[in-house]
Image (tube, rainbow, N blue to C red):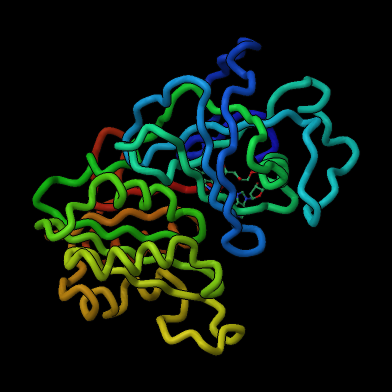
Length: 292
Ligand SMILES: Cc1cc2nc3c(=O)[nH]c(=O)nc-3n(C[C@H](O)[C@H](O)[C@H](O)COP(=O)(O)OP(=O)(O)OC[C@H]3O[C@@H](n4cnc5c(N)ncnc54)[C@H](O)[C@@H]3O)c2cc1C
């Protein structure tokens, strides 16, 4: 995506709402934690009271094109200065990872796209730096889509974990009836952001099953967990072995977030098992949020 607009779910450009004052810097970075090279968790505090949101929703973050890019990112090539020429903000959509019950900060889990317009600038930010935060959270990738008598399986690659961290932090009733099965995919074990929090939650909450999966085990000799592509692990016996539940649309709704190729492959496999993807105006048993 190379425009200055945030990219919403489904890839459709939102209607422009340009008024210059809407695009001011109105938030401050209060924490920046490096998970691994090219992966950070960033906390942002809005100048005004934070807006209400539902776990799973996203918001726009923005920076001006004149802001510096983090070292190690690709140079911006000549001729891609449309945004700079407009003097506008570069804005993109980011899922909120913090609990919707908290009002002190918003947390984001960010990956660096070295050739990208915004993420190299976000990665240059440090504590105390200012940025633009969109005026409200949007999106329908929420737990509302799942009836109360169904369990949920949440599968993510990379920073696609963000909305699930918000869901767990907001809605995981530890020891409650609803089972949460979370599949987290990354290339290497060190790219599994939030792993220690998820492992701790798994120990505390018998209704949480956490299955981390890495796709490049050859570079990770100490890894003792599952390896392969997330979509393959999803439809293997792993879910039944680790949760004791059979992956069936009669008992589960499945959420897929992150890499579009993973989402496509997983969706095909799930449909073969009787799951149904959401359609406009019709809620199915597969809910997706593609990041690009
Ligand atoms: C609803 C929604 C929620 C999102 N939430 C998050 C989030 O929580 N954390 C996060 O890091 N990103 C998230 N994204 C992606 C984010 O909006 C940007 O696309 C991403 O930060 C890249 O922006 P950029 O300006 O640096 O690159 P751009 O200049 O916009 O993109 C350049 C190209 O990089 C590729 N690309 C984009 N994102 C990725 C990626 N994550 N990994 C690999 N290649 C990519 C695409 O092919 C894209 O065309 C979300 C996207 C959507 C639609």
